[in-house]
Image (cartoon, rainbow, N blue to C red; front, side, top):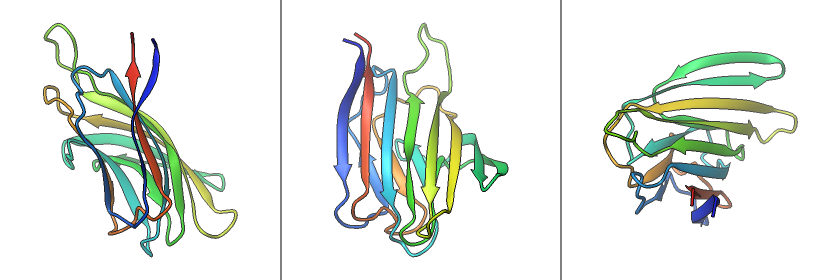
Length: 169
C-alpha cells in the first residue's frame, strides 16, 4: 500500500524550545514528511531548524524569501526550515526529507525540500520561504528528528507538528 503513514503528531500545550520525533529507522524509510503550524510565543523572532539525530552541524542549503514583492536568498548552515516572527507570529509549512541511504554500497548525502509561510501578528505581513537542505552525512542512520527554535520557548501552546513516513509497499 503506497502512502504516507503517520509516525507521530504532537500538539504543544506548554511552550517548548524543541520537539523530538524518536525511534525512527531511517535506513528502511525512504523519506520523512514533516508538517507544522508553529505559534511563536517567545517575544522575539525565532528560526526553526530541522535536525536529523539532533545534528546542528554538517547541514547546508539555501533559502529564498519573498515578502511584499521583494525577493532574497541566503545560504544556510543551521538546518533552517522556517522563521517565526515576533510574539504571536506563526510559521506553517511542510518539509520532505529523503532519509534512506543509497543502495548498493553507494554514498549519497540525504537532502530535503520544503515550503514555509510565516506571518507576524499584524495583519497583512507575511513571507514565503522555500527551502533546500542537505545533511552532509552519508552513513549514519536517522533515528530521530528534532525541530528546534532558536529562541527559548518559541514553539508555543497550540503549535502542531506531525511526522509521516513514506510507505512504498
